[in-house]
Image 1 (cartoon, rainbow, N blue to C red):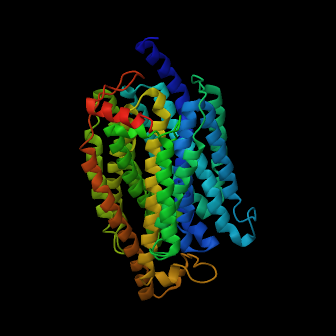
Image 2: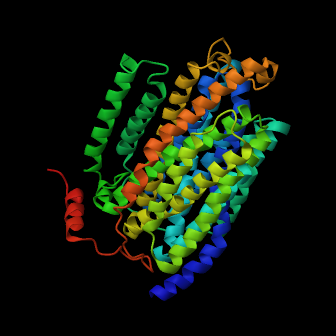
Image 3: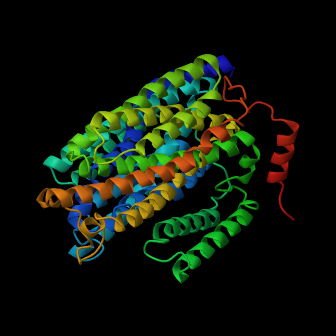
Length: 529
């Protein structure tokens, strides 16, 4: 079949399938944003600001460890069945999260434990949603035209981010927070029906077996690192036996993982991909992007609902500037890449603008007006819009079609693992900073209830005491953004070294690598004696 006929076949498929894929992507994105907005009330009911980040961390950790597995399974056994399975797992996790606190895993007082466990199940499914959408688009559309479609996906993600806080705020203010999870069920049902009926991909299956040992070692190593960043300096001293033991477990697990991957017939994370300079650079950039992005998304609603006194619904509305900046820029950049075929400048500009946006957010305090904070969020959203889909496009254009799922999974994996580390580390930084402030005694830990975060408590405090508490909260949140700046400042520096390889106009092998890269790739793929 000629390239022209391939394109002719792909376009109609994309038009028919895209709506179902967008709904599936919205499942994961809506859930994260709905829960982020409703989280202060959820934690308030179950008790414990010290658990604030774990409800999110469990979800992102589940997403992180499952993403490369879903991607590789799609390469081996066909993307449609694997993708639909991930949707079902996500919906099961959503239903279980809505039932948290009903004694499924323990007594009625174990609601927070159940919610965290079920969020991990939800995250396992979400990993397949994210990588599946990107890989399916990669199957149907050649890289030169992929920017337009991925720009549309980024637009849907931005719309979901806008709708998520609004829906989450409405649910929190008017319904039980449990509907923040139950709302996924009808959407997921619609996506399943549409995709079963319209998604038609070539069926293929290899005789190789999935690298379960590598997947297990990677999961253990990543989980250990996230626990170190969560507990270190907070629940345990950095030199405590628990932290040192987890650190050793992470090092050993990842070292053995690298050894196993060099010998696996179908490695979960093919190490040979990293011999390509562009792929290696974009993986690090994706890590840093996830690190900063998830931190901003989870602490902005907390700032708005506590320091600025917004309701849950209004805090969702106050995130609109960030989403608007991301939406507009993502659409413009996607179309520009399709038209010109050039992309190297966008991650450079995005890294600079995102760093500026996070630096502006460090200025947040008790006197910051909503118009001022909205301006800061617009700048952050613009930077994210330059980076979000461009990074995935560069990763996919760097590999052959047979490795598309693994590459998409790896790119999503590094963004997710950055989010896992970012949420864990930022949560520890926030908790430590808060414990040293007047707000610490009012909200952080303590008591049998685990220090329930009752926002109504602020209204009952004397004016002077309330001002001190709000000042402590604002200071702890702005301190988190200072740390985010330290990571994102490296993004434009790394992006400068990306080579602009011409985007393919059909799903063919990538452009010829340099002799040095060919030698590095051959060495990486060679079996170790």
